[in-house]
Image (cartoon, rainbow, N blue to C red; front, side, top):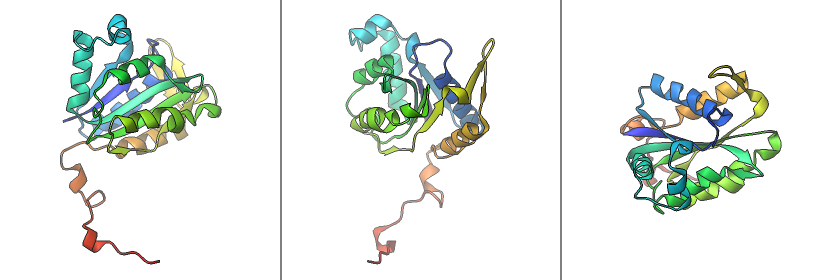
Length: 193
């Protein structure tokens, strides 16, 4: 089982990919197996023409199918997630995220773009059957500084939020069996009105 990181930026270097790098580091420290799909590296023609038989698309869809959890990171453009991410998500089967925990993340030029996580991306993730969508992580461009040639520096607050979010992702088949995550039998539920 693995955790799949989906990079939804069309850019070679992006702030949203920097968020994925930070989450990947935390997950690997917890012993998780991590895979990535860089949508920008998929065949553009296959994406636009919805050619799910194309090898690059088929391999990416197979990674989604075998993942236990999904992390989706995207830049916000014009109050919505990236178009290349939309093209990829449209190619997935309707229940592609069934049985999976999903962490949405986004970057944008200002805090005004923050609502795009809840009003644009979350409904699509829900429509793909995600069992549990975690609270998203949003970062402004100022919180993620890209350093030459391939580095980046995260704001301290953002780094802590990413670490907390990564800690909520399941890293093993036994994840739900731990006391903090264990299901509670209905007979143990108490309610006062």
